[in-house]
Amino acid sequence: MKSYQILLRIVLGNLIMAVAVNMLIVPSHFISGGSTGVALIIQHFTSLPFSWIVSAINGIMFCVGFLFLGKKFAATTLLSTIIYPFFIDITAFLSSVELVRDPLIASIMASVMMGAGLGMVIESGASTGGMDIPPIILERKLGWNVALLMNIQDLLILSYQLTYSSLEQIICGITFVFITSLSMNQVLTLGKSSLQLMIMSNRSQEIRDLFIHTLDKGLTLFEIEGGYSQKENLAVCALVERKELYLVQKEISAIDPKAFIIVSKVQEVRGQGFKPLKNNRF
Image (cartoon, rainbow, N blue to C red; front, side):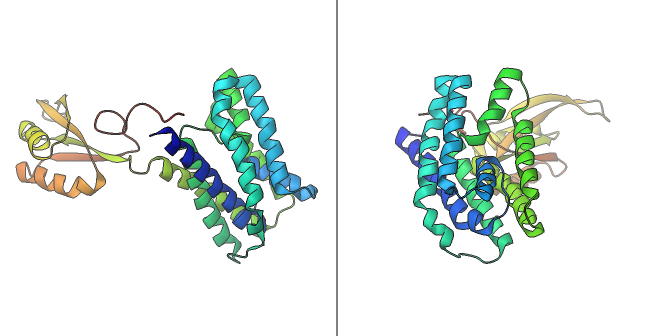
């Protein structure tokens, strides 16, 4: 991916997140995690503009990241540190637009948008900065699990908001956090997931020829031994797209109706013929 395309994805991702915050999260007053959640807590007790609070949080976290993680890490967070608060500020007028009245629907819409924006930024090889930085520092310095630390941090942020939030706001907030994670993962794996077939058959060579000459796909052969028969054989392992599964199974069945096939979902595939091993970077 070219540099300008990467930059465009980062900018668009931050814009989507800012719109979700101002158009859905702030007006509905449901709880949230991360820097958005911290900003909501501060805004609850002060009259400061939301964009100012977000700018302050991102600025402080950027300095902390630069101090502990160095210039290389800071470079990946700099763009989001600048443009996310900027987009929060210029889209602030959306908080007066009543898009939906039901807070639960608002939380679902916001979580889909927030997850999509986060996924676009992370997929571009950049960082969203903010409250993601403390867990990353602890992971780099102490070897602690960054995903677990981020979950604990979000839990603490959410827990504090419970003290002044209604039951409806709490339910909507939990829904928001859960769907945001699902939405982000879908964006990160969009178009990259495949299905892995492990095929055991007495006609493995014919199935090999099917994949190579007819389906034009690579495969791997494993030497196996049947647990019951104790006979040595070859197992065929291959990757196919989901839309190809029916056709491939039909072709295998035509060769050997007794073939044993295990189908597994593969979250992401990298390497020759698939997504390159090299990550997207500036």
